[in-house]
Image (cartoon, rainbow, N blue to C red):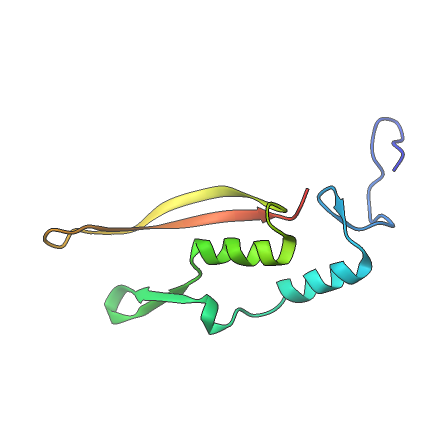
Length: 109
């Protein structure tokens, strides 16, 4: 796309792209459908939560596996935005530590 006055034109373009890699209309539709699906129970993990409740989450290795399936291995990137300790427990002879990690995932570039 040509630049005008040193600026790139704003607004929708004729070619839709994820990062720098161009996908055809069929690929974009498949990706859109995959990203809008609800995760099945096979993708979810649980752990005990406060007050006898349980906490459901997606493990990081599973998120990486799903991103690789959708965008291809090494075809996406991520950035950790925030990491916060969730709980720390020290039962006799053991220790358990969990963190909440907020991460942005970026499509292929």
